[in-house]
Length: 152
Image (tube, rainbow, N blue to C red; front, side, top):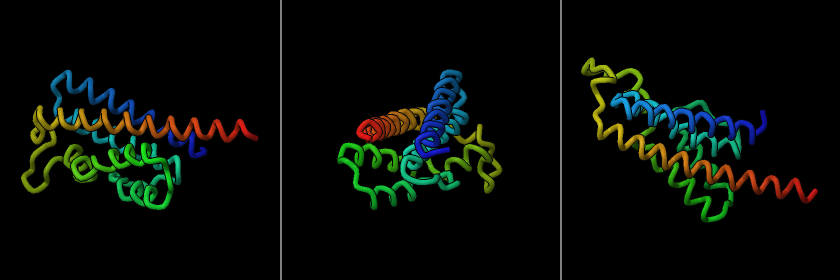
């Protein structure tokens, strides 16, 4: 699988998880909204990463995305979109993935008892923004690749 295919695959996952999060929100399933939104955010970031290099197997790819940004000159408009994607991980990274999947070990609280509507709304809103920004980055690099192929 080449980098464009990997990025497209990850973006497809992000869109699918976002769709699932939206459906779960409409059903008032707060914890599964959060779980799916977190996976949408994670895969949106991984879609951007795949445009540059192989994706690390982590639930918080923000460090890898930041390293890519630090060493790859990209237009300011694309940098801003990548920074937006990175910005969701303090709240929606590894810790949230674990909490939404396994609950809270210390208090023996199941995931469905941990999240409320406000948590779900925030996660859903953030996942929409993350996917939208990843789609824009993907579109930019896809258009750039087509232009380069056309010059050959």
